[in-house]
Length: 195
Image (tube, rainbow, N blue to C red):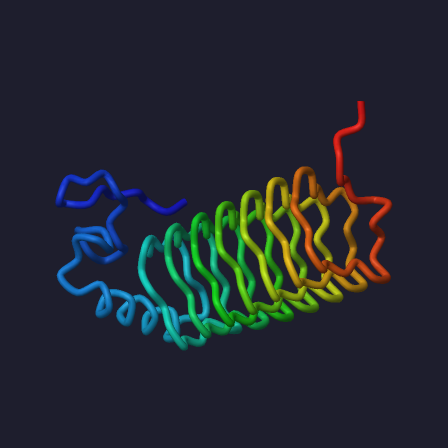
């Protein structure tokens, strides 16, 4: 599991891997994001990384294996995660805009409280994923296995879950607007608590 080294500035936030400060107290957070992004691009396996609060733009993280990493509060814009494999990652309170996770194998991730727009998770395994409290717009999950994932209190609009496995997927108190579940097994999903 990633080591939570506290920021040297004493703010209590986790320091960025390879640095002694968090993204807020870094001398140049852009350079820190470039350094982390370059490090990811140079490796196939990324473990125990802490990159909270950094901004990643137009970076290719596809075909990588991520284990036990913390990206909480980070921003990802036009980033590729295609055919990546991820286990035990924290993307809590992140922003994802125009990102591609298609063909990925993701398990035990948290996107809680995140803002996800114009993204695709098409053709992916999304097992035990927490999207609780997230705002999801213009995003597709088509042809994906979402077994035992959570969208509790999420706000989902103009998004598709076409031909998906929704067994034990929880949509309790999720607000939905123009959401398609065509050809998905919605009868095995949980939309409300039964007494």
